[in-house]
Length: 150
Image (cartoon, rainbow, N blue to C red; front, side):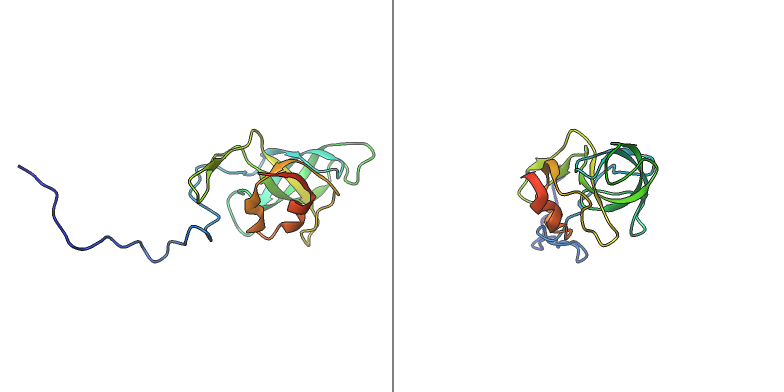
């Protein structure tokens, strides 16, 4: 009869794995990629943008990552106009994401907040919930403008 081998050694966790408090990027199957249309959730004047590129040499963007996007729909009296190329921070993603405490966060839509090259928000208000993980990505200004932190 076959039995499990008995060993006194405890398996070791690989050295390149990060502690739970520091790991913002857990394994995710999908992300915001090129030509993804995102909703704009600030009062900068844009309504929808299309992702052109994820920054920092990544193939796609996840929560808290910065993207380059083109404005597809805009309000006529807003700060940004249709066709303008802008920077944005992904604040909501429809992909389910696990947290360190075992809970999971998932949003109904993909949403972005428009920022300038220095990372400061263009608008003065952020509508809807934003995840508190943005603090780890150094987007504290967006958290202060948000009406609800999830």
